[in-house]
Amino acid sequence: MAEYIQIPTPAGNFDALTAGPTDGRPVLLLHGFPEAGAEWSEQLSVLGGAECFAVAPDQRGYSPGVRPQNVADYKMNELVGDVLAIAAHFGWQRFDLVGHDWGAAVAWATAAAHPDRVRTLTAVSIPHTDAFAEAIREDEDQQQRSAYMQALRASTAEKTLLEENAKKLRRIYYPGGVPDHHVDDYVQRLTEPGALTGALNWYRAMKYNPRIGPVEVPTLYVWSTEDVAVGSTAAMATEQHVTGPYTFEMLEDVTHWIPEEAPDSLSRFLLQHLLAHQD
Image (cartoon, rainbow, N blue to C red; front, side, top):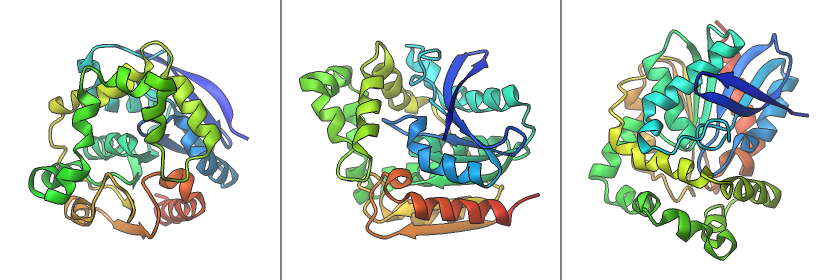
């Protein structure tokens, strides 16, 4: 059973779920849009049972205690800073980093900039962000898949997503394996004052985010064939941006919501990755 905690940092208090012994191998799991740390419920259970200390925070904009309203407060360097601040709170010199969707983008950037701190990287769904940016620029299929981002950056996005009992926000989770009770929880959180603006500001701040360069830490990348947001071009190109040990796993007939739709497969891949890189 995951335990709810708050993590104090200079930016504010992050809500988080944890599992496993506090002196276990530290694993930090970063959620994506539009979810929360609860998306890692199954992985928290597995990691805790494997004697890891797993921590899944609600990230900047999602945690009520860290919800700035300015777009510039959601630059990638701020998001990476949150990762390091959370690690500092627990006294982690090195830790394993896992991310899905936007959480994967932050994990890629953190691993690239701080290879001395990240023991292993596991990126779920979102490829290396330089490969992803190249695909958005050059690949017609990826351009079509990423067209939704413009709508999420619009000044009217909050109103559009929340009108009619958040009908369009709820539609984002389908089709896929996100449990209904998780959807209800995510939507309730994002209807809190300022929460959806914070979540959308991750997209609005993309224009500030530079290339991150190669990643040298041991990396696992998990991609699914039915992901409507990420095509094969960037997924297959990711290997070219990793100079360290690299493992690629492809899930057939699984949508974007891998942690909740294919939890057993993802947990198995993750444990294998951690066991292979224990130094």
